[in-house]
Length: 389
Image (cartoon, rainbow, N blue to C red):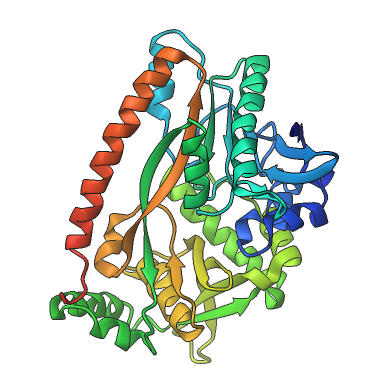
């Protein structure tokens, strides 16, 4: 019923066909975002993310697309399977290569399969089952161990679970706008002690002569983008020993092709000179959709206590309130966000393991992990800073 093929460049699908199926609402599944990764060489053979995007036809009509990559490592995925790879190695088996359906370096939830509106729920389920058969054949051909489908929607989770794939639950922390008219209204919903902690944290930067300015993507100039890239690379290097997965060419292409979805926050500091000039010292790159703000990349050239929280959390919350955005996704992990008003939410992934013995062991692991994460999320909800009803 369905015919499957993969292509090595997203341009082989074309922007119009991709958008017709995947849409434009989520910035990270846009054609422009994935294309910029390829044209900037942020993905490719050297990075260990080789594009193999899936196209699905029915009677010569394109009815589904899926971003997919051949991986030779597990970096940049944020659904961690290092222990699985190590178990394979201990048994003298190869875990890599593997296939990953994900947005590289981007732990943001969203559609991973763009279905045609002409497909019924039953047909989507059929397609999902047959997709597994196709990918199994690919894995046999390349000698791969597994297929991983990361950060998809709850609807896709149901389709994948019904098709028999192993499903895995994770958690992130998102801020929700409950009709706040300003930041003080948000703080007013917190207990007194937690509210004072946030105010104290923000006061750390008073007297540092800082200014914060959001710039819409269409208005970002090259100098500002170069400053952001320097900050991003410097901070990444300090944290991990390398300059980051993404380069200036990638960010430049994004601003040119999807500036409507980008907000660049520039942090400047007033000098002590008589003419009181300001110099940029930090930056953060945000993305927006119709109802969501996404905090993605940041960096600083100056170490100041509280600057990261202010730049990446509090400024984002203020922007979301001012622009009526309902959700602020500030990135993966970080339970420290809970005390700053971010609530735990479920994330989803699905996995197919070719080796029967390892598949059974990993299935047992994911079931135990799901129970542990459910307990963990309840514990975190209990310490949210909001006043008790």
